[in-house]
Image (tube, rainbow, N blue to C red; front, side, top):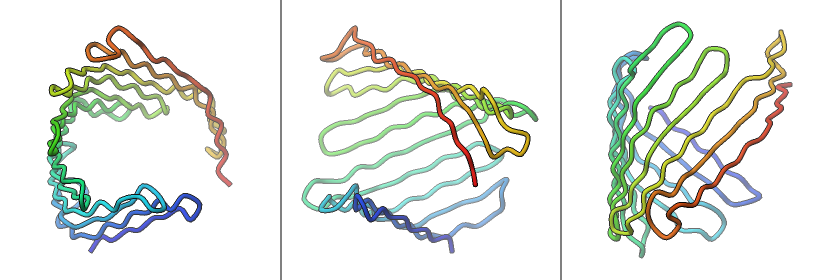
Length: 181
């Protein structure tokens, strides 16, 4: 059994998941049930999930339902394109279907053993003629010899290719200082 629960008493956000897993780290299958709420008084999403993973490749499906609002089913795939001692490169894709619209997308993401990462993706909602492209990155600027102190620079950009915000861009960045006690 694999059961987990989290909650935030300040916001009321909570989630619980319970399922079974067979296999090992390199190849496994999982299935179970979940429930979550975005905050106090928020709607509760209840659902089921299943996934299979082998050597960095994976397929998953999740179906969630909010009483009085509707259901959403999402299928996701991941393929590991490169895995070395220092770098991992993955390709991902998904399709989500609800009562009102479909959404799908794909992307590439890379992580290095030095703490750097980058991602590039595209999302599409055909019913609303909305397409967005996004890029994110993180550079590890400093890690203390003990590993307790980390300083990272982050950046992100979103470009609206179609839809009501066509031609607009959102760009952001920051510094993240973390110390683990």
